[in-house]
Every structure is written in C-alpha cells, then in structure tokens.
Image (cartoon, rainbow, N blue to C red):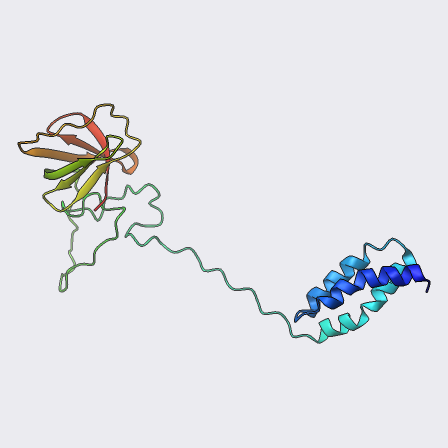
Length: 199
C-alpha cells in the first residue's frame, strides 16, 4: 500500500475513531459514508476493510429501543365533540348560564343531579343587564353582565360605529346566535356587533 492510500485511509477513518461513542451502528454508517467518497478503487476497498472491527461491534451491540408510540389526538377539554369544528353544537346550552360557552370548559353537574329523560331545548338568545363595561385602545367593548358572564366585541368586527352605553341609566344587551358558531349583540336596541364570550 503506497503512502497516498495510507493518507486517504487516515483522513477517512480518523474522525470516526475519534468520535467513537456508545452507538457502533452509527459509527459504522458514518465510516461507510466516508469510504464511499474515496475516489481510488484500491484505497476505497482498503477503507471498507478497515471498518471490519466496527462491523463486528455493530453486530454485537443490543438492538436499539423501539420508537415511542405517538399518542392519538385527544378531544379538546371543553365539552365539545371532536366533529364540531366550528363550535355550532348547542345541545349543552340550555340555560342562560351555559349560553355561548362552547369555547369554555363545561362545568361538572351538581352532585345528586338525576339524569333527565328529555333534554331541554337549546337557547337561541339571552337578555341581560350590563353592570359594567370598558373599551380597549381600538374601540372594541367588553361588557360585564348581571348573570356573571363577560363578553367582548371581536377585533375583526366591522360594525363601524363605537358602541354607545347609557352612562346614567340601565343598559340592556341581547346576545343571539349568528352563523357558523358566531354571536351577535345588540345594546339598547342599537346596532349589531359580533361578540365572543370570555367568561
């Protein structure tokens, strides 16, 4: 073997020897990849022959552990069926307290509640009194209702007119179902705004 072949072998195998680690299979693969880049046929064959100890070490190594199983996707923990993509299933919204709550986690039933034979009909709208309100820097409102709920005007609402509240009087809001799981709000019989429930 001439000096050129010895030099090629040293360059090809030295990094693999220096990086010898706990995975002989990977070391063998890396060494074979380096040998494949050797242009001279004799030097390339000698490179592969030099990997013989690494091959034996790879064969004697225990098999690698199986890949971890991927857990199946879980149902969102908000009481909504997996097929209800747009959140339009109103079956659980049968009281003012549950109206608009498909994006919230469903509360557990009270202890000792007997199963009903016939579920009540779903609500199409609720009416409540606004106990407090505020505006964000973009003019969108947030309302606090006397039933404990909090609703806000969605950022993409193009109502155009800033909602008007009676500062000294009673503000009544009617929230009704819109298209594709959306909700519409009318304050004091004024314009319609798109809202979403926060609490």
